[in-house]
Image 1: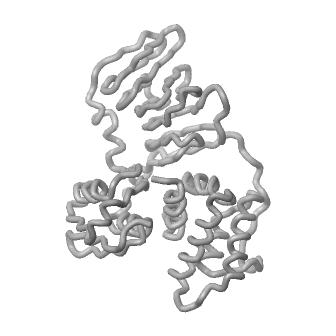
Image 2 (image 1 turned 180 degrees about the vertical axis):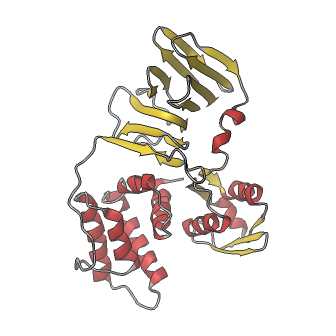
Image 3 (image 1 turned 30 degrees about the horizontal axis):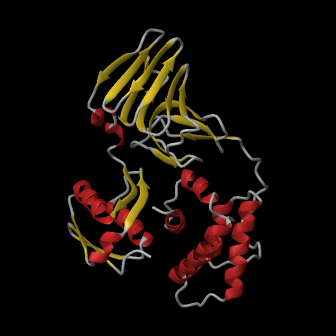
Length: 327
């Protein structure tokens, strides 16, 4: 999915009040960037038309909202409550009823943590500064720098996570789990390293990785292979069924530039429904979205529809998507 489509998806997901804290951080990378100014203006207009269809938004007010949003991000204020007030409620820059906060100090390291004992499994999906993607299992913590510099792209993991790494031959990606390093250039793999466990386990689903621990090293761990490190001893490597090692993430729906027919098929399998695309043109739409909170079918369909300016109707075990297709 192109970055402009991703920006639109994040903005609309916020208006639906389904934006995660990780997605808020990602949204900040777009706000104030000249390449997305026109897109932001368009989205502000669309938000206004949806919530205030009976009242026309004049250009002066629209420009005031735009400038306030951009300025709020530049000054490191709490951006998103202001966006909600500006777009959904139609506020202008008056300061009335808005909770402005003092600029927060810029942190060099970001931390994402999922609850250890939630009422139901809680996962977190995030996009790292280099575009790599991480799905974090419950009871896990990931620390990483807000921007990766030359040399390496390093993160520190406690718990379990599935990584999909963007290839960069000049900067290897390194996952630190205590004294163990997992080094890759571009691949997807699972790392399990909970503090209560005695073992650290690395399972590769695509590409190749290198695992290091003191004087021990395995330079070639390939797809469908798993390496386990216990204490200070040598590694154990064996072939495995990766679907079992990554079963924890099967509850999540992660669409990464997937064609609409594939998305429809996955929804049919998950929710035991029939998804009908009213127009063949809808098959040309690609979807990038993450649903990691066991969202119900209608919430998922609503987001997919808004991303692509579609209408939807759910009747019993049938879902109908209609419209002209993607922009």
